Image (cartoon, rainbow, N blue to C red):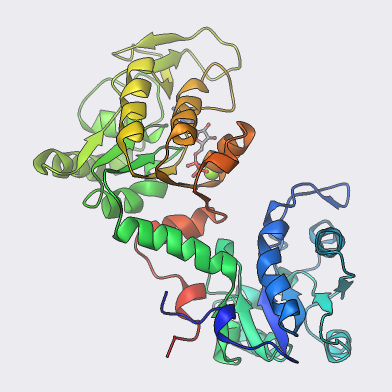
Length: 397
Ligand code: ADP
Ligand code: MG
């Protein structure tokens, strides 16, 4: 990576302003899932061990520019304190006099968490107010550290805005790891390189498909988006989901794949269908989708074909479930893919909120190489787009 990281600077006697991703689910005023807070610990410990103090900022939810008590970061302060074994101070805002006093009294080794940056409209604003707000935030640190991969695709005040006013700006370990896996694995993959793409909409992933198709040995399509591809070939899809306005692009991609000798693109050859989406509803496996039936999962032949590719692969990227895995009996395709990934020795990278939750639900998290923490950010990286949260950091000399 050509950007400075926390390893390239000394935090001795310095205050580090760290953008973390503590956008965690809460219930009854407590953190329900601490994965994201745990993910930040290596960076935070590194800075404290190096003699620095920490001013942490994050967003939580979408409070739309005003304080919403249910989206307070206070529970995250308590959770972090338990995980890191130290007190974590908390202030009820992220700018202003009270914050200034709290920041100035901070000693090396101490931690302060600021309240939700999205309580201020300027955090996400597309006008000058965003830079003015960023300038206020930037006062709280001597060094800026971005470790919030999940927000790295947003040009927000606390993500990229502060870097205009605070240098050096460096990457934390989490951000560095995400970039290394996602960029390096796709730019110079060990082959065969297989991408498994599924999920709800073609429109979400068409950019990724276009970017990955010329790079992969095989691109395996599942999920609802498979039916837009099938419809674009004139096949019957019954009442399965389809995006009419993506038919032309889908058809072009299939033609590109057909013309290329290296890049195979597979769409499902059999399907699990039902009259409607309902738990426990009678389902059947079909090759051709009958009128009035909805395809809700890939069928067993497709499952086997996809798993064979995964077994052969040396590098696999998976984004998006193969079917409606939340509702049995439409979970089998997704589970088979997850199992094949867990069993394989390949470099495996999982991205996308729902695919990650499928992997976690099955208990396979420890059996894959890398689980990306950022849904939108990982898709934009895979699309080859530049992330403001990364490009704004200080270059390596
Ligand atoms: P990810 O979060 O992993 O990127 P998406 O958000 O794109 O995935 O898509 C996940 C959703 O797609 C799930 O809620 C799943 O139920 C739905 N889905 C998958 N296959 C189908 C299908 N055949 N028909 C309808 N919905 C589907
Ligand atoms: Mg999703």
